[in-house]
Structure formats: C-alpha cells, structure tokens
Amino acid sequence: MKVTHLQTYIVQPERAKTVLFVKVTTDAGIHGWGEVYTVTGRERALECLTLDLGEYLIGRDPLQIKHFTRALYRDVSIKRGSMDFYCVVSGLEIALWDIVGKHFNTPVYNLLGGPCRGSFRVYGQPTGEDRDTANDPQAWGRRAKNTIDRGYSAIKFDPFPGPWQPHIDRAAEDLAVQRVAAIREAVGPKVDILIEVHRRLAPANAIRVAQQIERYQPFWYEEPTPAENLDATVDVRRKINIPVVVGEALYTKFEFREAFEKQAADIINPDVCNVGGILELKEIAAMAEPYSVAVAPHGNNSTTIGLAASFQVGACIPNFLIMEYPVSWEPVANEIAKNPFKVENGQVSLPTSPGIGIELDEEALAKYPYRGPRNRTLRNVEDESP
Image (cartoon, one colour):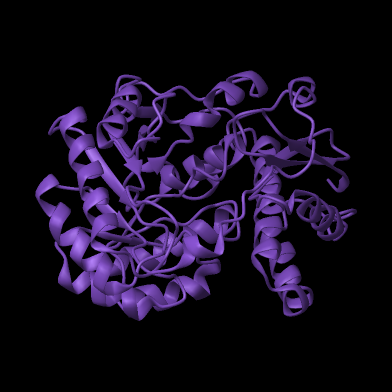
C-alpha cells in the first residue's frame, strides 16, 4: 500500500472557526482524514505547507508513521521549526493513523494498547446570544446555564476583560471575580467550572485572582502565565489552591519535558492538532503519568477530526481526565460528519468504527468554501495603557 494523493479542504462556516482538513488517499482505495490546527489569517499558508510536506508521503507506505514524522523533524524542522510546521505534521500524522486503522479494520486505540474506558467526560463553553455588552456578570451566568442545559456537567470560560495585559488593575480583577461568582451561582454547586487565563497574566495578578475565586471551587486554573516562562507558572502553582493547567502552546514531548521537571502543572492540555499528532500525544501522556499529571486534551481550536483523534488517545491512556468539546462547532460537525459524536449527560461514548472513528462528507464540506481571513479590529494605542 502506497500513498498516491493529498487533498485539502479549508472549511469556513459563517459563525464558527475556520478549519483545514486534509485527505490522504492510497492505491489500496483506503483514505485517511487529518486536521491541521489553523490560525486566523494563515489558512492559505498552512494549506500550502500541508501540500508541500505531504509530498514526502507520495509513494510511501502509510503504515510507516514514525519513520515519516522523524524524517520531517530531521530534514525539515531545522529549517521550518514553527507552530505552522508542527500543525501540519500533526494533521498528516492523524490522517496516516486513520488509514492504518481502516487497513486493519479496527479503531486506532486498539493499535495503541486498547481502551481503558468506554466513554469520555467532556466540557463545553458558554453559549447563546446574551453577550456581556454592559459588563453584566449575570449575562455570563445565563450563557453558562445555556450550555449546562444542553447536557454538560463542566464548563470552561475566560472571565478576564480586555485588553489583554500581564498587569491588570483592581477593577479588572474584581470584574473577573464577579463573573466567576455569577457563573457559579447560575450553574449550581455540582457543575465543574474551569477557569481559562490564556497565558496572559503576570504572577502577582494571577495569584491574587486565584486566591479570590478559590471559594467558588474551580476545577482548574488554565495557563495563568506565559507559556515561555514556566518558572512564573511554577510560582503561581505553589501559592494557590486550584489545580494548574499548562500545555496548549507547547509542541512535542521535548517542550513538555520542562513542564514536568519543573512541576509546573497538575494537568496538561496538549492539542493533538499541533503537538505532533496521535503518537506524540500518547507519548506525552506517558511522560506525564509518573509525575501524577493528568491529561485533558485541548479541543476548542481543533474540531471534528481533531476531536476524534483525541478520543483515540484518550481511550488508551490511564491518566485521561476530561476533554474539551467545541460546542460552537457542533452544528457544523453534525452536517459535515457522516457519523458525528453526540454528548449525552456530559459524556461521549467510545467510538467503535475503524480508524479514528469518524468520516467526513466531501459534498457537505463544499458548502463552506474559504472566503478569506476574517476581519480583525486593531486595538487603539490608548487601550494598551496600564
């Protein structure tokens, strides 16, 4: 069996993120689907890089996955080591695993050691039209309740107002705390609330806010400080009583090694669509296990295929905790996937189809053509002042 062809699809729904899917076809009539983590404004560049690196696959045996990724790391990454590179490697690697699973007529997790669980707990994000236009924390509570009413038992949100700065004033801190309080009140004591910080705060601010919201019993505190300064994250973790998450912006096992050695995290959230793919995610999870670090795969910036790939890894790792489910993408997923996932009582059942467990409808993909980068509003200079 040899790879014969690659096809890319940039899918751009009106009110959901833009996604880059890649289809890898073989001379055996088997194809595999991958997803490349996309960045606003760089979709075409990522597509070109996907087709460029995909040329390495033409004429090669798709079962030789590790050989392919190592060849790229050795021959290409020294010249193109970047987020784009790791995103593309991830997408191609996922497609190869999909082919391999279909070739052996079994889910990928059976080729990685077999399942440890029959379902996955997932969390969502606040949904609905009730925007916080008037700085009304209660609006946040209503949107959170919308998601919980859809069957989720856990919800993640970023309570911090913009503009994003490492040092925020007391008013911004107080508003963040009020939003957390409003969501806790709206969803009740049994729902887990997950706090996202997006790697933006200085340790002093991150610590002060965390200590104020501890009484609302957050499930975790995600990436409170910049990913490039894990020492700052270590400082935060030592001074608060909320589990700390890192990993969304780390690539490959080599970057995660430092997080484990420094004891910067209670939980990691690697994304299968940018960390290096399925096997790399499993190896990172194996590294985390002896450090008693749980794994909660990131998923809001990956979608249908990324979710499926994450479930394949989550099935076979003992330290899986919870998985992010892209709520806003769900209506599109239900249309473009022939066998979409379903959330029931906050859980998604273990997929049983061969490969990564999901198949895309190419005619449905064509309904959402790429129209170009979405508009971004540049902040005023005065908005950036302390």
